[in-house]
Length: 352
Image 1: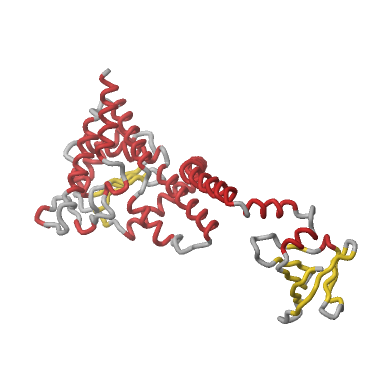
Image 2 (image 1 turned 30 degrees about the vertical axis):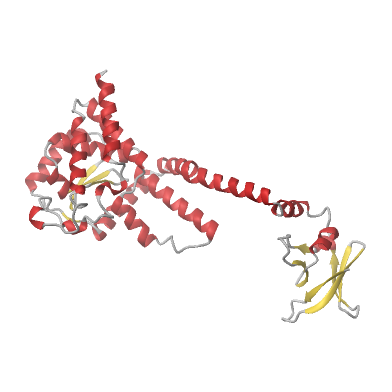
């Protein structure tokens, strides 16, 4: 006989009750012995044991609740082996610690290996129509949020197109020019955006080609799509785990991703390697890639030394106030020293 409380499901009243077993049936009676409900044991749904919290036994619409967990376990011994095993495991600190470590390990593997691998597979499996649509909408959004129409002259635009044309032949890529601080952006559909600031910073055609090949490396390896899919998947996973949607505001995360193109360090180095392979194949000195990277670092460093910008020194043709410490070119890239080491190692291997 189990002591507990009973609710018939017809109203909110709860009364004291007892539960007893009669052969293969469970019967709930009030303190006077009147039957309140009864049901075959197989039809009664028993809640899982969780510490010392009360257990509920559901009889269709009626519910019996008791604190006597041990009696419930004895009553249903053999019929809920999984629940009994889970209770034994959660009752031992060592088991809980092992489960926690295993859970954290699975999460770490998923974030660092599983999700990136899946994102890469999905990115390369997307139909061309979808990729083109994402690229077009991305440029529209960038124009709305960050970029302004270019102020480069027609002569400058024609020169850049002429320099890069031989290196884009046979590729479905298009060039776009916008007014912004020194940067170049590679969109999923193969569009490459050069900013006025970057064109003004570049001093040779070879540096221009080096930047173009780096951005082609992002396009060919679908880094933007992989990064977007990976970030979305992690966000969904966090929602499923925590139930918290406050960190999933696409109106905030998508513009930030578009503005910064926050590729991983590995993606940036992969794009550098692509650029060096392409430059080497076309007989272009790889040192030009190093030169433009150093110029970008010096440009970024100029804003680390002072909080205010002297507009009289502005030679990039862009509003330097846009170049904040949280949204500069190098903010999402590997350190320049790390990239220099990669280039030096590549050049050394070539000279052997």
